[in-house]
Length: 193
Ligand SMILES: [Zn+2]
Image 1 (cartoon, rainbow, N blue to C red):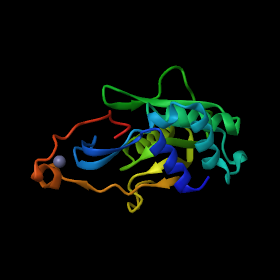
Image 2: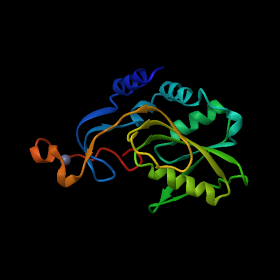
Image 3: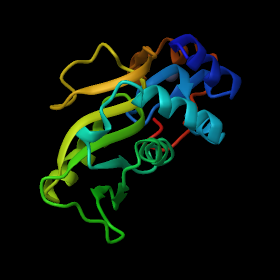
């Protein structure tokens, strides 16, 4: 699949929304990506994970980890295709943690998988937790990069297969608000936004 075919998968699933949205950052945008609507179809998760892993050396990783909730479906599928254990971090009272009895062998190399990255905050918090547990995050993979022009978000390499540069606006400088066309809606939780 090329990038256009993958984007078409998002269009077909109704996952690329046009309107007036408030992102989790508080900024406003005319487009919103609801990745869960694509990944709810297992064949889509399988196809996108295959694109993510097609050029990687599975022997370079011991485990796969994702930040919940957004990364869970694609992370599990990537781990399945690489035949590696899959663990996840999750937010409790706002703080990213690793729970559920998961542990990481000292020095294990981890592939960090997310569905959508923008500022990369959840991925960075996940990486910090992995390091606290003695693991070595070595590479990030995400299906969609919503801010491909942003460098220096991460201190390890990242790989994405769809670049979707979505223009965002400060709430007090939003042209859609100024036009008064539509009320801004907040379509998803942090992790999708
Ligand atoms: Zn607005």
